[in-house]
Structures are given as structure tokens and as C-alpha cells.
Length: 306
Image (cartoon, rainbow, N blue to C red; front, side, top):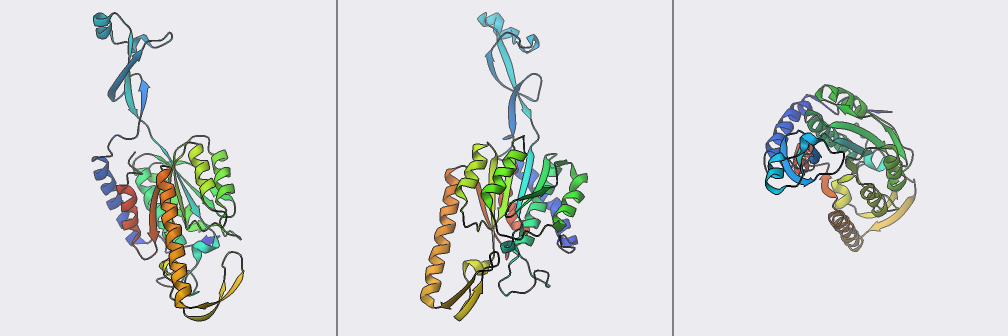
């Protein structure tokens, strides 16, 4: 198990209530009331009518309309529902990589995995404060254990404890088998946050499409290290792939770096476009940006305010 005793320090905890207050402020704006389901019966707000059918509750009939039209209509109301919010966090080796090869626990170092857990913790706090049910799930080469659904701010300590003690996956990211197992495990649909670098050799398209097919509301948080986007390399190098152990010998020429920049930029643009076309929320997060700024971007996108 990988422990991170300093991951959630007092400064981190002090920012959570501020983020929750910002979420409440945003929810009173354009996104207010988006997460409602239409149900008949007494509730918060009238929505519409439908024709009466045998077996309907007679108390739901609008007798004033019947007196005018001589037809039976049922009043429909909108009812607030809570939500299951699942955070699937990539715990593979690439998420713990640092560009200089130092240990992830060294002072001041923030790995992609650190950033992912901080983002998930902050969003979990907002969801729990909204009385939604929160679950956290580890994934890597396969789907790992999950926290189980928790509700209420009093359960936030369970989320933090779960995030502090993460498993070590011995291989890389395998999105499709992980997400297929997740869809089979979870009977009730809800909101899913996938927090990963999405460096899966098999790709992301089929895996994300699978979740959408199973009617999950999917949001992607792609966590990256700035050195992955613009590596500072020169001369002859011997590189080791952190998840497979495969060794590559290269000469980092300006032309090679230019092709790499073009390739990574094309990949990221295609990924974001894929998500947009399929109604999947997308946020890019790097380790050099404060987690609270990234969380605020998610909140402004409306993902937690439905």
C-alpha cells in the first residue's frame, strides 16, 4: 500500500469549505436545478401534465382542468434527487512518475497521482456537502477495490483515509477491462469522474464509449506532468518505460523533439474532441497548477451542479 501522510495537510483542508461555498454560489446561477427528475406526486415544483391512465393516483388529477376540458390529466412535478458520484483514479506506475527520477515522496514533488488524489478529495468534499453519495475506486491494469458509497460530510474522513492508502499496480493502465468491470459492478447509474493520464496503449475510445453506452454521465480529468508536454532533453539518452520496463536509446535532436511536440499536441486535441462529440466532460490538469484552480474549473463546467 502506498501511504501519503502529508498529502492532505492543513492548507489543503482549509481550502475545501471555500470550494464548497463557490460551488453553492455557482449552483444558484445558470446550472441551478439541472439535476431534477420528473415524478408524479407531491414535490417541489410543478412541471407538466400527462393523460390519466388506469392505476394512477386519483389525488394527482387536476380537477380544475377536468371541469374546463372534461378530460382527466395528471399533474407532474419535479423532484430533487441525490446522485451517485464515482471517482475512478488511475493508480498505475505512470501516474507516480517524476521527470528527474527522484522518489515521489521527496520534498516539494507533486506527482500526477498526488494531483489526482487531491482533485478527487476536493470534489468528493463538495459532493458529500451536497448530500450526494460518493464512491472512490482504484484502477490500473484492472479494476481495484472501492470505498463503497458514502453520504454526508461526516464521511469525508473515510474518503481521505482511502485516498491516503492506495494500492500499487504492477502494470500499466488498461482502461477497457477496468471500466467494463466497473459498469458490471455498479447497478445504479450516476456521475463518473475518470482521473488519469490516459496513457493506455490500447486507447481510450472503446472504454469511454462503454460507459456512455451504460448511461453513466462521464467526466474526464486528464492529469499530466509538464515535462511530458515539453520535455527538456538533449544528446544521447537511454530511456526506460516506467510501466513495461522497455528501454529505448534515442538522440534528442531538435527535429525529434519537434515531432514529439506535434504528436503530443495532436493526441491531446483528438482526445478532447472525442469527449466533446460524445457528451463527455473534459478537463486537463497539470501538476504545476494548484489543485483548487483545477477543481474550480470542473465546478464552473457544471459537472457537480446537476
